[in-house]
Length: 337
Image (cartoon, rainbow, N blue to C red):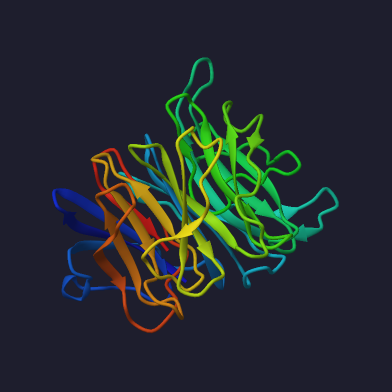
């Protein structure tokens, strides 16, 4: 599995950079790129593991950073977290920054890393946070956290999150104006159930909402958070073929409306969205009811009420899944998958 970077000309005046994680693409000429894409770059050319999945991306003061889980296969005991930095000197060779070994050296797989660059607040210095999960399966895993004070060059000892707290389950948190880090999360031990976790001190203490669905009549996981004029919106993966579910909050994520489907289709596959600095929203997802190709970007100009096609990133047979998306300080948008 490989990773590559695309730069795409804008939706309107916005210049977009897409960074993708995918299988078996080693070089692409400009004529072969999706419409609007003007450049691409591999994150690495020599994979350090047979398979990888669930990538995440963030921007630091030193440049972009990315992480993913990799090993023999998803769920294998040798699956760890891998990390690469991208600075003016280029991308660093991927290194394993965490694994699931316990004190007795028994090893369990790692899952779904989520990066977030936490700015300095009050007396606390800025930290790069790397959330992840450890466990034999999504129904039994628990939340973990690494911290870096030097943009990912070195990392703290792993911290186990409090019981019942998993951290952001797949997609990035959002930082609210009151310094609350709002983490979209979900569980799979009693059906698929979405909930929201919050921390005001960089992951040291936590609160969480009740589940937003019962996991029986309605199934949803892996929410992504958008910031709207009215408050917040989450978009969720669901087991029901062809659906993406959404809910809204007008009180900073304390309570949420009923989960309801939006107009876009999706084949029970991971999604991710971002609110741009100009107020528009982008969503990366598979616009199909079956399989994981094509991989698409949609744009909303009315706070997530309606969506229009913006780009087709992949449309050949294969699996193009689990995207992550951010907008960087220069206005560019980066996507990994």
